[in-house]
Length: 431
Ligand SMILES: C[S@@+](CC[C@H](N)C(=O)[O-])C[C@H]1O[C@@H](n2cnc3c(N)ncnc32)[C@H](O)[C@@H]1O
Image (tube, rainbow, N blue to C red; front, side):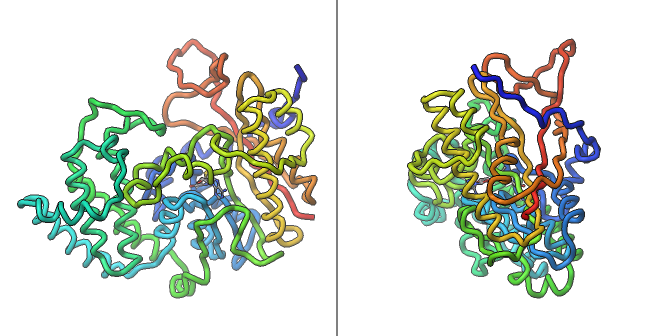
C-alpha cells in the first residue's frame, strides 16, 4: 500500500472561518432560507470571500451554485453574480432567490391563493382533483413518498400555483411548495438521504404552505430593501443564472475576478436522489438513472476520456484499484479538471478561484480532494494564494470517522475523543 501524506491537514485551523456563533436565523437572512438545500454553504462564508477578494462591480461566479448562496451574496454586495447548476431545482431556487418582484403583487397573489385554497380544500374538492391529476407527471414514486390524502391536498395546492400567470410569481410559490414537500411526505424528516418513515407524524399541507409563503414574502421584501437601486432595476444584467453544466459558464474569456464555489463530492451524496421530491412534482425526473448521470460525483456514469492532470489523483485511484470505486473517483477527478479549465477561461489574470472542499475516505483510502485540486489547478496555470483550514461546526452532535467505512458518523458517547470535521478553502490565483 502506497502511503499518501495529507500535507494540508497540518495547516492550523483558522477558527474565524467556522462562524460557529451563527444561528439558523443568522444564516437564513433575506432569501437564503427559502429552500433546505443539502450541502449548502453558509452565506457568511461566501460574503467574506467576496469582500476580501473582489471589489464592487466585479464579476463573481459559482459554477456549482446549488441554491445560489454565492450569487445572492454577490448582488447584495454590489457585484455581478453568475451561477450554473445542473440540477433544475437548484436553478429554480437560485433564480427565485435573486429575482426582484413587486412585493405588492406577490402579496395580492398570495391573498388570492389563500382564499381559493381555503375554499377548494375545505369544500368538495373532487372536481379540482380531476383537473389537478393531469398536471403532475405519472410516476410511481409520488405514491411511494406521499400518502393518498396528503397527495390529494398537495395536488390541489400545486394546481392552484400553476394557475398564476406571471412567471416570477409562479416560480416564487413553486419554491415555497418545493420546501414543504419533505414535511408532507413520509421521508424520514431528519435524514437527507431517501429513507421512509412509516410512522411519521403528518402535517397539514395547506397550513404549512401558507406559513412558508408568508415567511418568504417577508424575507423577499427584506432582500429588495437592501439591494442597490440600480441592481434592483436591472436585475437581469447583474445576475445570470443558468441550468447548465459547470463546464459551460455564461461568461466571456478573462472577465471574472472571483470564483466562490463548493463542488460536488464524489458519491458522498447522490444529489439527484436528494432532490427527488420536487423533481417528481415538477416533472424534472422521468428516469432516475438518466437523471443521476448528469451530476459530477455520481456513481452512475461512465467516461471515456480520462485525463487527471494530477500525480496524486493517479496514486489515489491506483490505491482504490480497478473496481467500481476506483473508476468513480477517476471519473470525478477527470470531470473536475475540465471544470477548472473552464474557470480559468473566465477568470482574469490575477483572478482567484476559492474552492471549499473537504476530504473523504473510501475503503480505507483517503481521497484527498483538496490536495488533488490544488495540484490540478497548478498544472493548468494557477498558483496557490492561500489555503484556509476551517472547522465545520455542527449544531447537532459532533462526528467521528467509522473505522470500517471511513464515513463520518454521528456519535453520542461523551468519552470518545472527538473532532469536528474540517475542510479547506483553496484560494488559487490565475497567473
Ligand atoms: C456542494 S453543492 C453546492 C451548494 C451551494 N454552494 C449552495 O450554497 O447551495 C454542489 C452542486 O454541484 C451541482 N453539480 C453536480 N454536477 C454538476 C455539473 N456537471 N455542472 C454543474 N453543477 C453540478 C449539484 O447539483 C450541487 O448543487
